[in-house]
Amino acid sequence: MQCLKKKKDRLVQWVCVLVGVLLLGGCAREDIPDVDDGSAWIQVNAAGFGSTANYSVSAMAEYNGFLYAMTRNEEAGAEIWRYDGTAWQQVLFADNETNGIYGNPWINNLWGDMVVFQGKLYCAFSSGVQGYVLKSTGCEIWRFDGSTWEPVISDRVDIDEEGAITAIAGCEDADGDPTAAITDSSKEWETDMWAGGVLQITSGSGMYRTFLIVSNTADTLTVQQQEVVGDADAEFTICGSQDFENPFPPYEYTVGSVSVGDHYEIGLGTDESGFGDMWNKTIPDMVLHEDRLYVGTGLNFVNGAQVWYTEDGDTWQVTEPVNSLGLYHDDPDFNQGKKPVVTSISGMTVSTVSGEPTLYIGGAGSSGNLGSCARMAMLTDAGWQLLVDQGVDVDDEGTNENGFGSGMNCSMFNGNFIPWSLVEFDSYLYVGVQSLAGARVLFTGNAAAEDGSWLYSVGGDAEVPAGFDGKRNLGSLMMHQNIAVNLMPFNNELYAGLVSVYAPTVGATQQYLTGAQLWKTSDGVVWQRYTADGFGDRNVIAFEAFSTYNGALYVAGNKGCVDCPYGLEPPEGVKIFKLVPGS
Image (cartoon, rainbow, N blue to C red; front, side, top):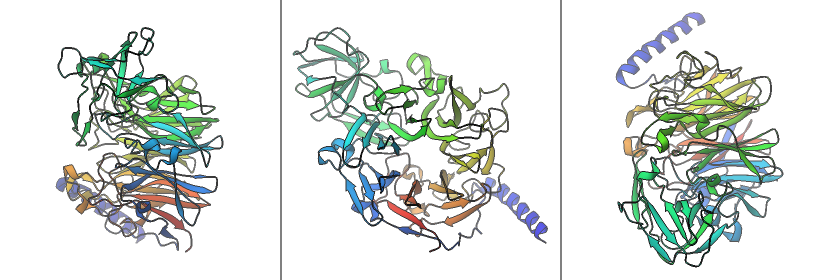
């Protein structure tokens, strides 16, 4: 009878798939019981730590007896809070700043991470959001010893030069020259000593604006604006106030004007924000490997994502290839006709599936002639070796192709778009995938570059459908309700915090939120659901930022879009939940 029941269930599944595809409704699973193992999840903070502007927590970490939480705050800049098991306390930055490290509201922390390295807490802060416009001052890394903050990768590490602007020329739109001249008549510089550096405006309405320094004379800098992705030579440098619109996800912002009398600083070298590249806007992930701290950058649509590492916390080197894992689309609208394929290092982990501890990374692939969607690579003595990419072998089949086999027509709407999270569990390497066609989970026992190396645990040909329940968003049926997975191993089980789609500009509005889901598995194949509705809060958009503290598991219930600037309307603050076993 049990065998007949399984066959009947499988027949129902196939009928559901057929009808779901025809109706664009997906194959929804309606009969999913929630886990009843005697445990409970309890909320341990006041929502948003008392502020609705803190609508997400991008990272948590245990350090020196506290649980630290890093907030996302699009209003005033990121905050840091810590928990002693009883109460939360805000951790002030240097000079008693509460937000944005040094009061910089652009440091919003769309993504971020925290790692304990050489006895200190290293905090990766992000500035900006997904898109083809900058809206960023570059990612930063600071370290904390429990009482004192120290900049590691930041414009605040040092001041290579500073002064005040005495004259401006050629700083208008369509004036015949894309560059502009910024003069400080008090200076006597060597020719081109600042070439390749960044001009940072530090006062006035244009505060936090940045410009690439092309060249310099004794007292004048030739600068280039880089606020929009594409060919830098085609973008005019404009010192007046400007409005920018990002096409997808749609958002707008304004930069202030730069005027005579404004103060400036010059940053030179890889210790500056963004490792010296203002388009390294975010740091999605950090990981320890072989006594080194590795850091991946994100949302670099101009030059491509990077991975940096340090052995001492102060001296940093970039891994090879330097940008985009060496992958570039042919595109005449980009610098030198090359458009970076890998714009974000979205996930990193160390795994032993190859026989020895090895660093693996996942990258988000942009559109172009090399195909879009997920890429995977492993670190070797010679640099990054691609494992998932259309160029790993001569055929175009298998889960080693780009998008784990989604093919050259893969996009965010139909395939394995972004390797959202990477973990090792039960001797396998697991990847939680972001896709508007439903969140997926894949795994491998060898992480090889050969056909068939990756198998589905969720989505694809697995028993569990894409999105874990197969449901689509009722406001925008082209997208599933659950679009990404945050994975976390804990006590011999693998937890999956799901990300719900929230995109008001394309119909997936707040009224269609149903509350984020949380799942777990003990064998990597059979999944059980903890909650289908954000622990009773349908406005919990995502379960993210897993961490352990005093032997317990914690997760953040976030209230904002995971890759765009939108929070709820009216805004709501993030909730932190703790797993209480056997309660």
